[in-house]
Length: 197
Picture 1 (cartoon, rainbow, N blue to C red):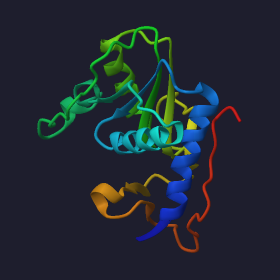
Picture 2 (tube, helix red, strand yellow; picture 1 turned 90 degrees about the vertical axis):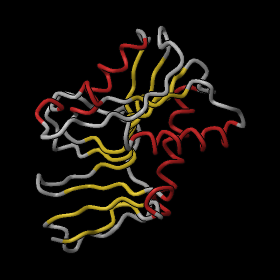
Picture 3 (cartoon, rainbow, N blue to C red; picture 1 turned 90 degrees about the horizontal axis):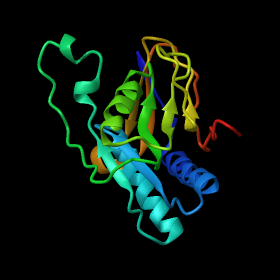
């Protein structure tokens, strides 16, 4: 068992910045676009994106929310203890808005399915896109694909990806844990792109 960095702190920052510019390229000033982070870890990426977008655009992003998906998951009844829900902060209707759902790691796709289900309680969006920092693309159990990707990771089933944040973990980095990491080099430059590029 070993751990290697997939994104160093510098590459992490470049990746987040690039994702912001891709959103701006596709949506301009983001007028009419709602940025929604999925609890618990997707909100850390969503908050960082929001802050960086406001810095780049020089204005406040009004349509921002954080969505708890606990009771929309298909496995919550099978857990040994009752899960503790997080807070949903979404005080506007999603009717006819463009929505960008944000999560840190896309793995099986089940978290995103739950997020879509939870989101529809707040209205009928004009369209929904998915942005993730890490896409474990060979691990999908549902037909869900992201529109914006920070980095693709090809990993085997017993490997684990963790995203660490300066605010909660002391440093921005992405780590890969498990067998088969010997000789893998960390990424020093951002990789990945918008899915349609």
